Length: 338
Image 1 (tube, rainbow, N blue to C red):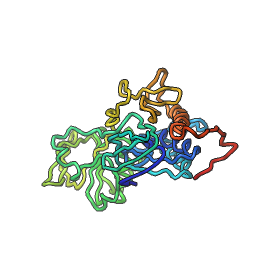
Image 2 (cartoon, helix red, strand yellow; image 1 turned 90 degrees about the horizontal axis):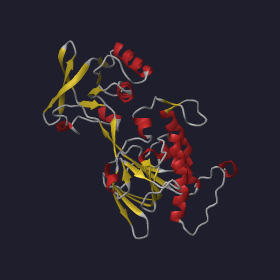
Image 3 (cartoon, rainbow, N blue to C red; image 1 turned 180 degrees about the horizontal axis):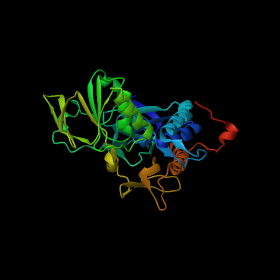
Image 4 (cartoon, one colour; image 1 turned 30 degrees about the vertical axis):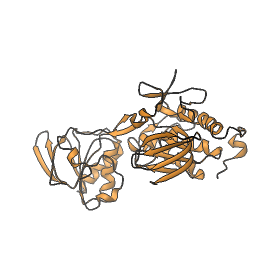
């Protein structure tokens, strides 16, 4: 959900697996959390880029799909009622006189928090754009890089380009929403999940989607808004397709984004932290997960879980310096929600 103004204890920048688990650890300490993420759904890369990819190094799970891991984490934090600002990225930072912070999002949402945990993975994800000369001309006028609301495409003619999980999954989903869905891929085989590719092939055989492999988008045409996508097939040449929407899903490219201007100590596009508690050079701000760097750093989800756990213990002391914090095992006290 998006709100104009939010007041919380801990602002977590990034709603990937590390950010989500941090909500759990903070909730045990009765800290309310709000998460902000530039992606339209929680889960970070696990949900947006490779939901069907198996992960093998989560303790207790010999194998778990990335999307299922996110579902489990969402269930785990549900008792603590976190709130979300999605589809917006953390933009400007201001430290207030009382030691708390005010963060303004890319869409003007104002979030006030007593402390901040940056769990932004590899940073803000910018869409990888195809090299089409007039692509930006039709952005928000028929060209989308991320599907936020599938209903936007109801009864529309949609052309999706890409060969990964996201392109396959959305082709399958929009087959029941759009008037016409065409999936374009420059190769003959897909790099996404085999079962998803097989489902697309079945839908194509039923005439419910158009499947064009060995094909690339070359040009977009329209009159103020998108009307046509011109494709080039490896052997058949030019193909012109009427289209209301063109959605290139070529993955996301990580960038540190506006966080680079927050006066944090940065080394090689990552935030330097003290491994005692994963604090940054700004008191009250922590960096956990793939966004941070320190000697011996391993970019593993389970390491991020550890970092988030220690960070919230320190954040509690920062917020409430006069309160005594006693560590208790969840096996003893259970999970006490608010």
